[in-house]
Amino acid sequence: MTQEASTTGKIIKVAGPLVVAIGLPGAKMYEVVKAGEAQLIGEVIRVEGDNVFIQVYEETSGVGPGEPVYLTGEPLTVELGPGMMSGIYDGIQRPLNDLADKSGDFISRGLEARALRAGKKWPLRPLKKEGDQVEPGDIIAEVQETALLKHKIMVPPNFPAGEISFMVKAGDYVLDEVVAKIRTGGKEQIVTLSQKWPIRTPRPSKKKLVPNSGLVTGQRVIDTFFPIAKGGAGCVPGPFGSGKTVVQHQFAKWSDADVIVFVGCGERGNEMTDLLMEFPELKDPRTNRPLMERTVLIANTSNMPVAAREASVYTGITIAEYFRDMGYSVAILADSTSRWAEALREISGRLEEMPGDEGYPAYLGSRTAAFYERAGAVQCLGNDNRLGYLTVVGAVSPPGGDLSEPVTQNTLRVTKVFWALDAALAYKRHFPAINWLTSYSLYNENLKEFFEKEAGSGFGNFREKALAILQKEAELMEIVRLVGVEALSVRDQFWLEVAKIIREDFLHQNAFVDEDSFTSLKKQYLMLKTIMNIFEKGEKGIGQGKTVSDLLSGELKDKVAKMKLIPEQGLGQFEILNGEVEKV
Image (cartoon, rainbow, N blue to C red; front, side):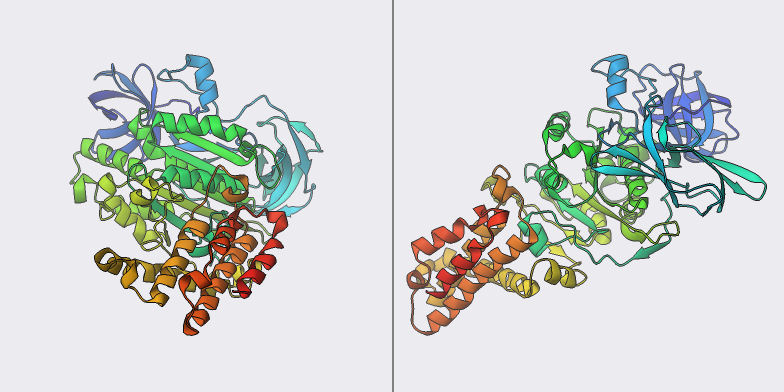
């Protein structure tokens, strides 16, 4: 974000974040400009005759007609290289810590700050030597960026294939030092530790693959009932207070993604503050190292300029694609895409475009699809056949919880996982508050083999039976409200008891209890298997004339309720528990 200004024009109109200028004959779509005497950062979003329409990523109060506008000749880009991990950026990749050092608690206008630390030395280990043939995407060196992540230095995707004519020795280097030269024909291209990429252009890959590996989150309602694939796209809609941020925080803490990119897009400042204070204290469950060592945070809160909110999701997903290209599994969490869509609506209104449904621009659907379709399992560029995964999960905040509104509907068209949050469950303190009757996952068939291998044989059958029991419970509760439980048959009463066990002892998780906050696939399988054993044993017992109290004693129910607290290293206790079920 340090482009040099070139052509100069003049402002003729200012309407909030929208600035109109003339005298810029060379202006191109999505070119970065600097507007006004304060040189506020903006981007060209329409060129109409001599008029150039610019969305400014900073507060425009005090800017007026007659002030200069400078073209930079470059699109909005992000700088990609060592130093991004543990970083906290605003929507256009300015590091918030550096901005705070320059201006205090409130960000002054016109500030620039380099995304990566130019003077910091990084320990580089070459993986190629002079004379080696390389192509775009090849890994030529690596840097141990954090204890959790090796940063791969790659040939940029827009470089031609060629021969390495120069390669540095192992040692410590700063970002801008030349670490390799690649000769193609008579020309040489230089490779440094960092590279730039325009945020609105997806980074290329060799091939998109069908996702067939599950992203394990440790959340039972997600992994067992509505799983998401590595490289999949999911949607978390829900009304205010239903726990969208809770679900995404748990996802960030516990999922087995190598890298997490969290985009706080238009969220309340106090929520982002909690996140920024909490994350540095969290430990990665696999390594017991700080979670921030594999996390990038992008904070663009609701009181920050609205135009930067629109850019923040593209900034986040470009950073995520860069780590995907290294061969990592990356998850980007956007909270919330409704605020991003509201930014599109505001800018569209300023441009006086024809409004679509509920005032959103007509291109809301295509913009939403373009964002989510950057997810995927891919064969990365380069000649080593490495695979990379980019999983996108977007939170949607429909006004009043109305899931028929345009942002939710456009999101559901392009995502394959729908985790429908229910305010009624949240008010009952049932978390994650994902409604098992209205949610779905279209990855179940793709992931069937994965779960059978990683969890246990028959996992898919157990899931289908459990969902059928919960569906039956919903039907029976309609009758119970009218005539009471006593009017039901013994079999129906037993079904209700098993459904209650599934809801309260399997689906409900307590994030503040270590044994319950994260559940491995193996433990999820054993928990579900135990419940299904109770169900099958009960079905036979009812045929023999047994009552519900005969089949489910208070002691057995108590032991089943406590099975979620069995530690991961003590899974042998499930064998004892199932032995007791067999005695019923």
